[in-house]
Image 1 (cartoon, rainbow, N blue to C red):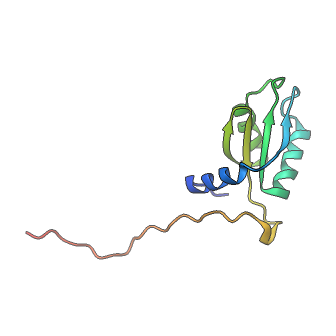
Image 2 (cartoon, rainbow, N blue to C red; image 1 turned 180 degrees about the horizontal axis):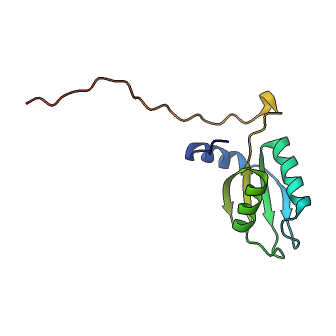
Image 3 (cartoon, rainbow, N blue to C red; image 1 turned 180 degrees about the vertical axis):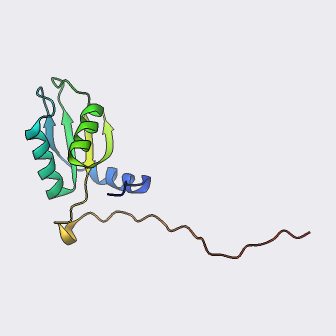
Length: 116
């Protein structure tokens, strides 16, 4: 999977503003059950918002790092006790999130020489 660029990350952050929290990291931290729930949610939605409770042994940044690695997803943002993850789903078909495509660099062009 190709990493997302800054414009795509900004697009996903904007989309995440209206999302409700679908996953909560509690006092047990990140276990197999939580990873499975996150994996299922990413497959169904592509973009999920998660929250870390005060009783959790992990900070939001630590939980985001671990969960993104275990679910093979991209970290979109971490703010306070919440974080957002993204993973493209091929199963959604036309309902998937269409990310902004990076502009192609112009490689072909005329080269101008300095007038002497």
